[in-house]
Length: 354
Image (spheres, one colour):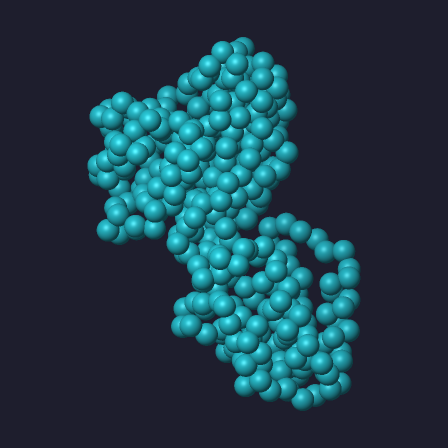
């Protein structure tokens, strides 16, 4: 059986955030086309302030989607959800941990709702005797602490952590989690990510997952969201072939997005350039030419406020050599460690500001 999985929709009302409902409807329309009948929502279906679920329930009752069964795992934004929250019979809320097997051939799924005072290991410990190593699937809402370590300023702290020890001791065939809005795949642990970018910080294509409950295989599918956000920062230098350099950088940036031609009208990009140039007007003209198919955020223009004019060839040569060294050396990673671009920016401050 194939089950679709998404998370972190943070629904409010259609009037306030119509794009979030649009993303959900796009997922449902894809399920209709592929004749799939189950959608799992791994937490934060609703935003924290939302207490009116009528618009979501109306969508579930829509004749187009009436055959789809919605399996909801409450997250940290909606831990108050229970079966009593809905009247529609195609909605199931797992407000308590539950092992579920969809059919005789499928791997059992442990639906594990968010608990503020527990780790995931503690929450699924009562089910350890029922867990066949490699023969079950975990769907929950929280943090895979061995994976991505990007701090979330909106939600500081650790939310219902899952550790490598938890996974190695019970060996689920697949783990799918909500809470992190950025898509993530490493080994058998996956975050579908939010299906709709909420703002300019939630970049790139959005997706949902298709889980084969018989084999545990996971595949990603695109969500046709209204906007695809990108947040880019680029350092420019007054090289001898400055124009060729910036053209190559911008072209590489756009190619790294891996978008189809039809997706470019949906792009909204915040592009900030910093560094030094011999001609700021020419630089702006080059950026506009290469990025002519892209809308810029927030003022409709790339941000050149941190670009300064310099014709000092010696400093430009020194900056080029420093850039080469920084990008060729092994670079440490981890929380609090600046990336290569940030380190190079600091170096430019030293080179150009006596």
